[in-house]
Length: 233
Length: 83
Image (cartoon, rainbow over all chains, first blue to last red; front, side, top):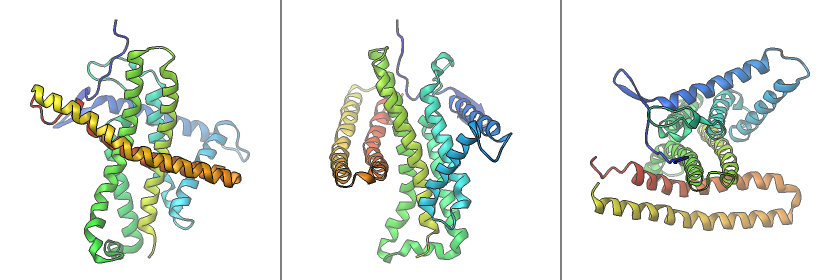
């Protein structure tokens, strides 16, 4: 009897007009969004001056995200970007952990399987491209046309490299997250294939740790790119 | 699948991860050694050093992950086989 198996690159396709969607990603993404909304609603519906329970926890998370943003973007402008960085961090974090903690394999799809939305390259590429848009918007709205002067700094010789950087940033962001999460899930599934009980547990713990670090890194890097674009020279 | 292509893909996948692991391995070792040294010299800065170390380790890890992505795409989504 086969207890577990490794499947990569199999998707449960859903057609919407001319587009083919990876339905398993959408199902888990909406689940993650639902969890986040429910938690924020529960934590904020009876707010009090002295926070207790869930409200206290949510305030702690908010302060954590404010700290990340402030340390990368700086005291003056970080407020505008806390929602964006926070959304990235929380979505990636909850996605990664939901893929590891919730026994999705119980639900059997006709094709493919439910897992963390971030182990699909499309999700991470979308998040990375949003980050690109965000830092372009940040730079142009803050400094206008002078934003483009950073392409010829420190010398005009570096122009090609500076342009190339705009492409490598989203590429490395998306590949890093995608590769890490997929690698975690692959290692766990290969180990469960070999030894189904107990032995994969330490690796699962390592996976939880690594995926939380990846969420932190994605948020930190996005904030760093935005901070770099805003910064005056 | 053409057997030569599949054989080459498997070897290439192994090489991709293996070679990509060398550099980051050395780098992570150096970084951790320096961090331990820093903590030994200044134990009160441990929290800050640990945070920075984890962040930079993850950056180095990413380089191996690029190799892994190449290996995975060779193994599971090989563009050279016409199915």
